[in-house]
Image: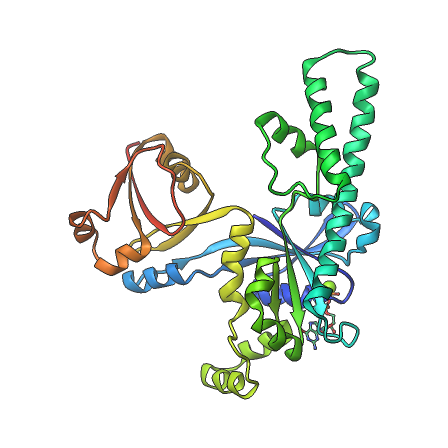
Length: 351
Ligand SMILES: Nc1nc2c(ncn2[C@@H]2O[C@H](COP(=O)(O)OP(=O)(O)O)[C@@H](O)[C@H]2O)c(=O)[nH]1
Ligand SMILES: [Mg+2]
């Protein structure tokens, strides 16, 4: 899972990156002409934490690879050295400056303007790819007649039409053929983007009050600098600091972002539990029990017999698998069962 931070110079990318990756080891890499920093981030999950407390077992959160990248000049996207890298990412975090004097008391309308600009540039980028490919196909069709080329041509005309109208391709349903074409094109308007609004205290207070409408538009307000300082304090000091600054509804970024990021990537989590370890696993929404088993180990997939499934909350309510079975809360599911978010799954298999 590759999550990439991008955005203009001095927007707070590195500050947010450090907040998300804390003290995890950092590694400097090159991708083409771009220099990147990689570190992992643990996707905290309060559900898993409660399960681990119940079993008194070590806890394994989902681990995401995060990348800090050079500043992006959005109006010169096509020549950005990190462009290829952005295309290969599963999720883009676009960091917006809402802390500097330059940002002032930026409003929701101002944020929307920034997001609209990014959208336009992504659509334009994809439009050029689709147009170039289309031109090439039209030339090829003078020499070769194939059903596939014709299908590709029609598909490109469709997406070109959308992009021309500044409509991103994210959320568009593709068939298998189209899916494979799209993969090769490296389109940007398909990428999920979360706009991380890096705030000073004043802007953070303002945006915290309209958090839900911001989130609905993919804006996640954070006060990276302030949060770093808060994390240095012990819990008591922290409480009084939060009261003193009157930070209404203050929630630590680490409590909000994991779930949001997973949803944006169309991923869900299931849990394996026990005294040895409680662990979260990420799968695409709509994954069968058989493939979910393979996520843990190929042997479990090969020798799959059945899955025993229970929602995490239902389990904690009865606190035992045998009671859960009696009450009909623990279900036996076959290989085609689609695993749901927050389920504890125990696989029976034979090697
Ligand atoms: N006051 C304040 N300063 C910040 C905040 N985030 C970043 N900065 C400062 O802004 C400058 C640029 O931040 P940096 O994370 O390096 O930005 P980048 O160029 O996008 O990686 C640095 O001097 C940071 O210390 C913030 O939330 N509040
Ligand atoms: Mg930086």
